[in-house]
Image 1: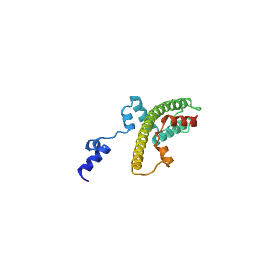
Image 2 (image 1 turned 90 degrees about the vertical axis):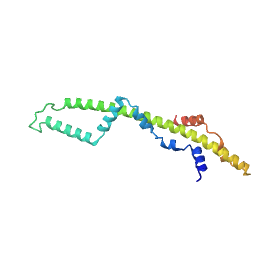
Image 3 (image 1 turned 180 degrees about the horizontal axis):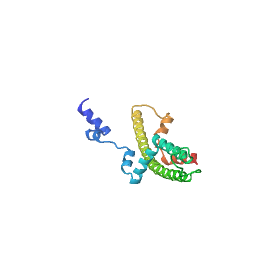
Length: 176
């Protein structure tokens, strides 16, 4: 291609050396960079607590606890006899702490998903407007070339701008 054609394409698509050098950062990467200390701790904790190693450590600990406290291991004296009140308290506290860390991580993940969803919606609305404009331009071009588009009912429907409010009302009716 000649240099003029390349310049035209770059200007048309907004692509040049500078734009190619820009690094796209994902929404998640941006959100990760803005995490609070507590969110960072929660992410670390949930990644460790959600592992097979943590599950195995708990199974081993609880099995050993029960074996020791039911006098199955004679070398170690029982310190929390049945019904294992101390073990119950420890497990309850562990569950509470784990649940809080998981909820912190899930809340952050939900915020990221919500932002991503809103971004997609906005991009889709912009794309819809751009496509409608292109279709109008193409219809004008075809009419000037003598093509009769007056009988194409689907095209007439597609050339109307989309109403976000109308879609929102229809979805609300379906949901509610």
